[in-house]
Length: 266
Image (cartoon, rainbow, N blue to C red; front, side, top):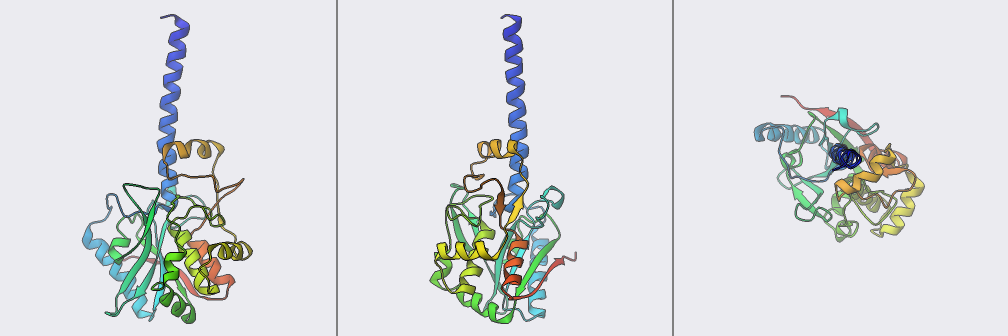
């Protein structure tokens, strides 16, 4: 083999290694944004998760909350982009026993591009928790009543888009993640319609989605590394839904009671 060929071969291998190494980095960073999954290795043992889940329920019971939005961080905060504190959100709805059922969206493991609506427990919701806190968003009493009824109506399933993307754009109807489902469910209850096109148009007039600062390299290589990183619904800016976006919707519509962070006690 000639020297030129060896140089070209060595350079090609180095480039390939660099691309895949960078790709895994991209996958880690992206996956921390809003990964809607309950699969993976738990950081905390089950008894700790049970304890943290009970602390959320005790907090809601203490305030006589019928329905709240809770968010948790599935990635260590230092790895999250600016403006993102939490990665996964769900509705906590009081049940007949006085506890809370958790309504949320998870993507599948066999087909990670499809999602389903799941009702589970507070400990299940916290299974992939990476930070010892949770975002708590409490609507006013009237809106709690609206959402309480909404979650058991056909309209809840009607606002679900099963085609999944990690960082879906809330102003585009083609894909959805957990936080976007929450956004559309809240909007549907407030504006009394499950029609997603109408909701999109109303949301475009009402909120400013969270912008993620994503470099051209990450936008190019991300979808090659993880099929969930669909970016076709984004223009010049990468826009998504976060805990802050949900809070914003309640604020703008005058329906917010309070929004804060609950730090878990060991």
